[in-house]
Image (cartoon, rainbow, N blue to C red; front, side, top):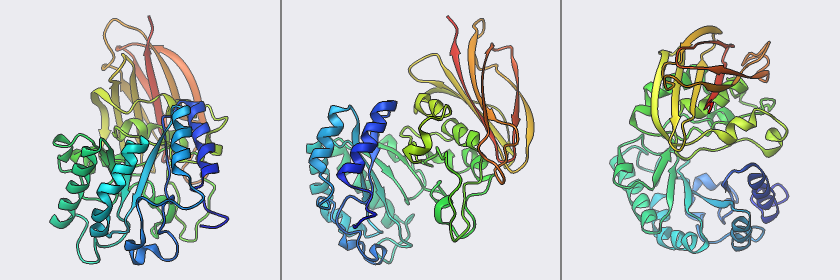
Length: 364
């Protein structure tokens, strides 16, 4: 609360306007509810999940969002007070169901649940299941942060869309070890992601922030684009500030890239060094490809055998530009189009910590 409070009616409406302008269908708001004052991590029992701060008119915001075809995505930070959260689950989800809020991101930022149990303990697993089951009753999707890794629970409760369960992008904002390493995202598809979708929250376009801990995003901008393909999540996020997206041609890829796929293939990869993943859009004949590397620049020759034989495709390529380097200048991106087929072998040049993101559209 106070002059720096971001979760206000005015600011949320501005974000809704931005989302509507660019075809994004939801805005996630954190910090809207009573309980954030003081040291909230010391006692998550201060949180209310039905009472908004006075400067956040949840009924007006959801009404305004509907008029723009943009939904409010709720946020429930528990600070690890899971039992306290369970006492409010029914009322909170009932309120959201009434207002048309059909997605909730939950959070458990604390070392322990209820000051005694590990997040990935049986105690935690039972709690997450209860949250997902209750949410299903009210037709609400869940994005679970700080949980156990994937367990297959979404097969029983498909409203469990995605979860974190690993070092997400947020570590680049506060971690004492300098943030996620360049090889972290290269490895994730073959480690954490074997257990299910991961909400990494990619899409960082602004790299100029300074933090006392020295944490930073250790990738290029093109690498961030490629993550939307490399890291699967059926609920994706454009995680940066609107002002960092406005006027940037690279943002077109974020707006276009799907969240669900009908096919996935790995044309090339070497553990901890580089990863190339291609996926076919569930709703069209388009393919997308993401290629990322660790701290080393490299040149790859990628055969496009995954494209349908006998057809031509327009490849829209977002690649590291001249001088791109995750340490010194992460911004340069080149954007080009060319015609390819499944017989094409594509040369992919990756800068240190870099990436390439491509959309393949069938030429009819």
